[in-house]
Image: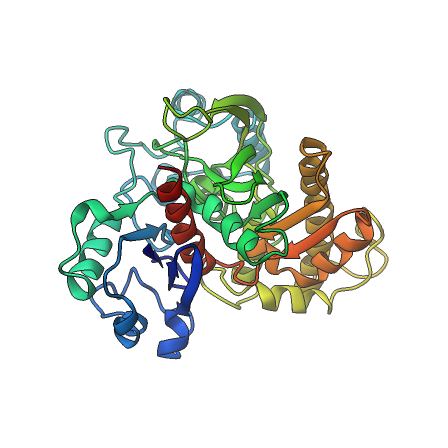
Length: 417
């Protein structure tokens, strides 16, 4: 069986597998020699990688698309929540009072309307009849299929954007030494993945997830951390930048109350493997989000996709003690802030890994995937922190690897059926 996985996110890529084995994996950027080639902006272009290897892409049984980057998309409800035309927040006292009330509950329509009554000259009016993002993924896929696979049957073309993190851990597991013989723990973490459960604004997306990886099967979800910070963080910069990312990341940390809820898996209701797992909804930034914001703050990348430079820049920071900033060294320079965030990211990551171990006490194999897995200095430290466990980092940990995971996911589904 021949299956083509296509990632139309950043790090656009395709992966061809046959009978569960990778035949060809190509990143579009490398064919074009154009870093950060954006599939959304240039959807009318032919894919050079698909054209170059078209001789391998005959007689496909399925084409499965993975999700794409929505950071450059525009929605009628996007933009600053603080309405400058109404006056906004003009004093520190007003900002602190607003944030105290803002943090009192998880942000949703009810809470937003309540805040609007308390701060009538602050928040913009939301058109709640236009809640969903205008995803143009159908149009993107249609163009790719018409250009490169015009004879492909529609029922053989699959797109399931809620499986972004599933595809990540499947990619890492495939390359690991345990794929065909041993179970493993899968951890996916990035700046923001699938919007699995919430379609209304401000919607939540996966930032960290934990999975059980079993040879020959699709991953079993065990825990998901869902943040809606991406949908609301414009409020910080526009409303009161003296508290936002522009000066010191997370000074105005949107640490809303965390609700632990139990949700069903995203499998079909009739699936015998349907099960329950913990889902954590919040409005906090993830490690991946922090590094993306630091990319922007330091001028490395307008969309925050060059986290490698952030990790390098962290080495220029002053020394920090275990938990607090040493005020005797210097004030908040960008290098110091970056160094501090690198240290804090390690602490946060260790907590997630420990949670994964607690959920899988019988397993010593850990697979890391998602963009934050490219934090090489932290990866090395995990070995010392968890000496009884073995770690494997996905060699395609960024979004390019979701093309691999998508193809493998469909292979497993086809074999099972």
